Image 1: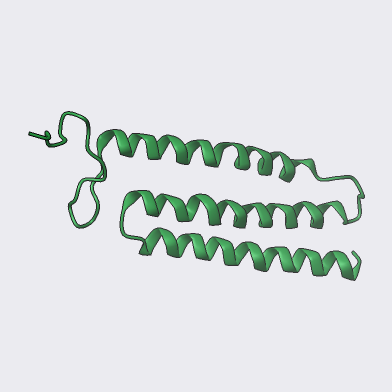
Image 2: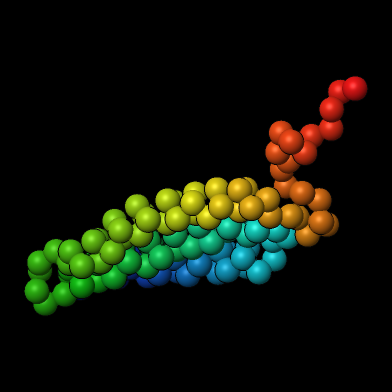
Length: 117
């Protein structure tokens, strides 16, 4: 393996680990469900994507010079399903009117709004 490939793999592993750490901290520290959903969806998806790309480069530049398609297939599936899953979870939370930590409703329906008279 060349020095450039090793440097690229190392940089992608470090970058991926930092994004995964940032997403995990966001999951633990953010106050309510919808903001907690944002951290892992964005940051962790990028982190796992960088780790999978590093793995694909590592196994593609080894003894056999074929392109590693297993990691790329996982990466494609991850990037397609993670935003869809986050969107569906957010819609379900809005439908159920998940409350904030300070017990204020996140949204109100038309029947619950006060009338103008």
